[in-house]
Image 1 (cartoon, one colour):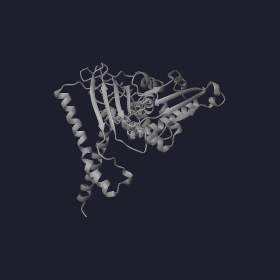
Image 2 (image 1 turned 45 degrees about the vertical axis):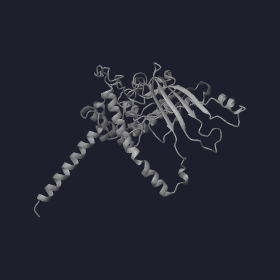
Image 3 (image 1 turned 135 degrees about the horizontal axis):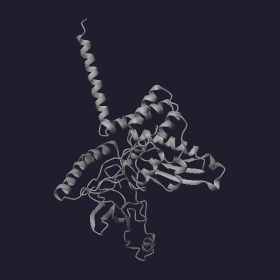
Image 4 (image 1 turned 60 degrees about the vertical axis):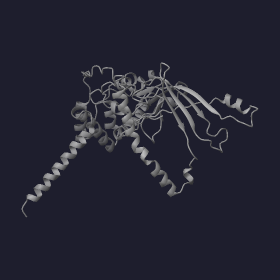
Length: 382
């Protein structure tokens, strides 16, 4: 299932093979009955702003092949959404009509005809959703359920360009931390929001000689917003446990092993390669603030509560991940990292946490300078 936020949730429905065996062994072979698949499962994925994440689904589907993979009898699926109180809320049915179309057997003319026949559906779907949502909210006065962060069995949205770049650096940093650990560790890292990148396993040097003592831990990022939130913290240990316990942007199967990865001794004095690095990272240190907790009211009827963010009174240097980038990354990675963080933190302070406003301001500034130079050049007598 997909929602409008780009998140996905695959459900695996197990077929009842005992019912198939009964049907096949039936003596009424001259008039075989269609095979139906029945299933029900709990809902744990945010689909609609007018429904909570609680409840369950029930499905009744006809086997499109009916035991013969060489024939196709059509699609017929009925799906019901039942609330946590046992009330039926949504009933939908997917039914195929007409002769199936094999795209591999279609010529260019047929493909163009098919596209012209159905292209308008894409453009009218979103306006229809907006119209129905407005009707439910204003006319029927239903509460709006705000989107929660996805659970560990769901797939988060795709990462934006900033989150994708930070993911690559975080992956390198996590590998570095595991390789620096004095404990026998095997850490499986599962990223979020990337189409091509897959999970990766890092092992500490101590694990090579202590196979029976290796501690296996799985770290799964649930949403790509984790990467942009992680760099706001000045302390790794605080970042991981706040995002794990409070904000639910990360899932770990064995949280007790996290101190062996992220809890470190006081680092030695840091060497800054150049003046621009010093200027950027000093600015980042001054602008860095702990991100606010992801605390939203469950419905539009609830109050948002206090939005006050406590001020961190601890005196600290740049974050350990900043130090890793400065000491162990290439010049291109340092330049990209410092630019991303400076852009984010300036937007947080002065532009309502919207970095695109900075881009618009810079564009207007460039256009103004270009216009002034053109007017100044035309005013010079020749």
